[in-house]
Image (cartoon, rainbow, N blue to C red; front, side, top):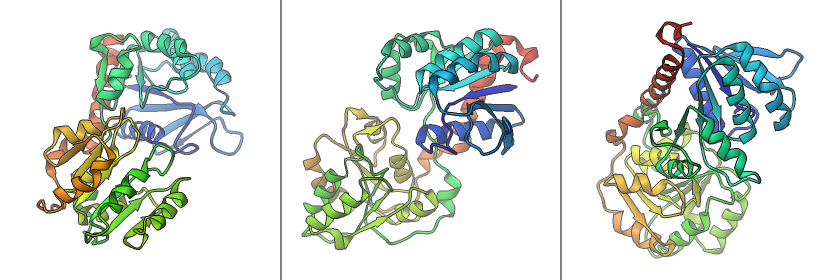
Length: 357
């Protein structure tokens, strides 16, 4: 099977949850023996227009990240490649329309991978792109609801969540760093003040906390912890790598989720898989409550003022270091869902005889 991955932005140049997802899928599909080419803006140095990394071929459609130029040059590149399936990131929306035009030339199905649905300046572009696609992939129910509002039919959406790496959890040590943990990119959406105020409400209790994450709001969060007189019991860990945070989660009792924007609550999933109880503050633009409501170690709350009492209420629950009920989220199972969908749509569009071309 020949797969075209379309993403103006790549993890190598712009690391984010969305670009990491596209890279993981690309490398997995390639590892399964399929031919994979990523059509992107050039992020490597030199004059070469394509090269191979981890069995994935990267093709420079443009040398800059100008979305209009990328959209103009993409259709002929896809037509020449003749893929069996086109998998395109939903942002920017112009690249989706361009991928769909390329799909018409190449006679290939187009699958949009929606990490989130952004409002944007030109909503008609997003709506048109959504309605022209063959199929849609979403990470959560919340994103699916927003995608369907664009006018999508019922039978063309597949929900594929983000994964955990169960082997990393099994191999990791148990680190006695904190009882209560918060993990997130420390940006404007992290809503970390709610977490810190919750800890302040427990000032008379015995606890240690860890704030794990990087970002522009980190220094401000540290100052807030000092102002609330909890800095001496709150450890700030400057990383978002599982190799560092999994041992901390395995030693912790409670994970607190407060982020205001979360298409898929991947750090909450890691925490629940490591045996933590998850206290989840409901946010209209976050899918975290979906995990909390489905599992007995999830504790959904509706107001930040409830964080302290929720933490105190679950602190004496049984301590676990792994929860195997989340095995369905293991990376192997999740990646297989992508491959299965690509093969099914590619076979439907071209006929079974062409799928191994």
